[in-house]
Image (cartoon, rainbow, N blue to C red):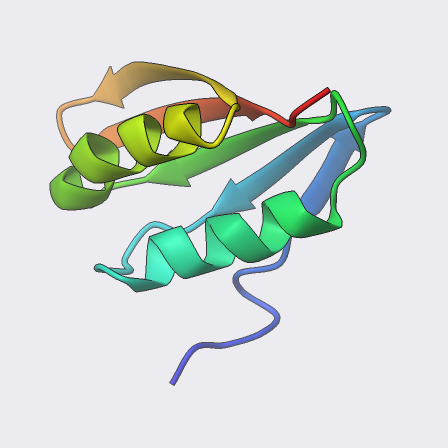
Length: 88
C-alpha cells in the first residue's frame, strides 16, 4: 500500500513542484506523475526523482506524446531526475 504522506507533491517555489517516487516500481511512478500533472497549472514544472529504470525509459516518450516538455538527468548510478513542464 502506498503512503499518501510519503509520495505527495512538494511545492519548491512558485511554479516548481517536486515528487519523489524512489522505491516504487511500475506502474506506481507513472500513476503518481499523471495525478500530479493533472493538478498543476499550465507551464508549471514538476521534478520527479526516481530510481526505477523502466519508469525512466517509458515515461518520457509517453509524456512527450501528450504534449509535455520532458528532460531526464541522471543524478547518480541509481537515481534520475525527470523534469516535466506542464502543457501550455
